[in-house]
Image 1 (cartoon, rainbow, N blue to C red):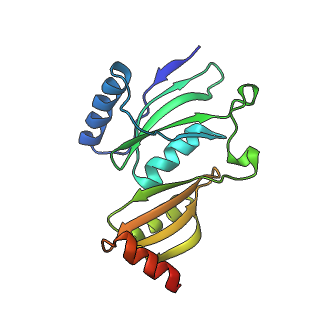
Image 2: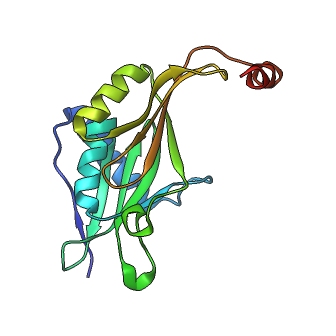
Image 3: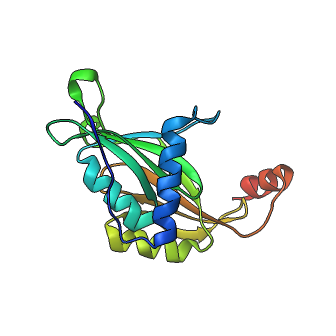
Length: 172
């Protein structure tokens, strides 16, 4: 049996109200058209806390089973929702730690990539490739979270046309 459990956080009151509003909207309306990432991890409760601390995500709600495992949680990051759950091997739901890694990365645009990397590392992320200016007009860093998911943090520096990107890419 699943129970809805609201998680208190260290967020400002307006963020908590936004989370309450988002929870009501999330549970009462059809989801928006588009792609929503669904992350499976070992210890989803700890992962949710990490995403709040490392990236400034807001947890909207979570459902837990009788054993305390997270069967489903919704979070919001940079104005977009993503979902999270614990591993359920009996249903084929495994995270990167059980699969030996992930071929998928999650990209988040941030106002200051260096500051975002510092915050994520302080929360436990590992830098795979440090922040650097890229040919496509972004300052980009690649990180791994403690649960095996790959994150790309990007800061837009300039708008580059596809033709200019191609020219710069060939010149590498």
